[in-house]
Length: 162
Image 1: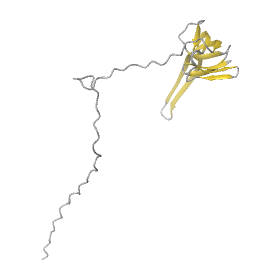
Image 2: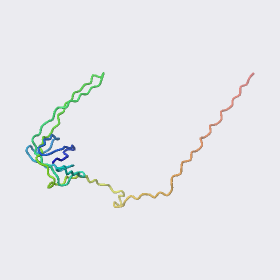
Image 3: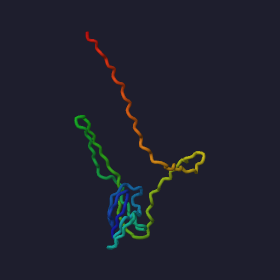
Image 4: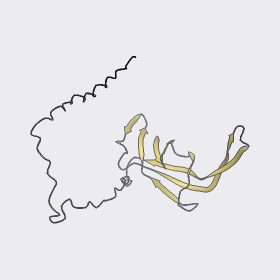
C-alpha cells in the first residue's frame, strides 16, 4: 500500500518505512505525528483519489531528527562595476520515518481558515441600508465633435513702388 501525502506544500509518495526530509516541523524529536492530508491511496490495486483530500485516511510518522540541509551558494556579480557578493544559505529540515499508512480512522484535514473582514456601512445614518444600483435608462449618446474654429485671414500688405 502506498499513498501520496502533502506536507508543507510539497507532495510525497510514501509507504511503510519510507524516510523523508521535509521543511522544519514544530514537533520534538522522537514524537509521532499523523499526516491527514492524503491526496491518493493505492490499496493493493484499488486506487482512491481525494477531492482534494481523502477523509479519514492518514499516515503516521516518527520524527527522527531536526537538522540543516546542504549549503546552497548564490553568487551575484555586476560586470565592469567591481561588484561581487557570495551568499550561503542552509535550510532547516526535519527527517521523518513513515511508520504506517491507514485508510480509515484519522481526523478530517483542517480547512484553511478565512479571516473575517469587517465591512464599513455604506450609509452612516442607516447602517443596514444596502447600496442600490441606479437603473440604466438610456444608452449614452455619442459625443458630437465641434468644428474647429477658423483662423482669421492674414492681412494683405501692399508695397508702394516709386
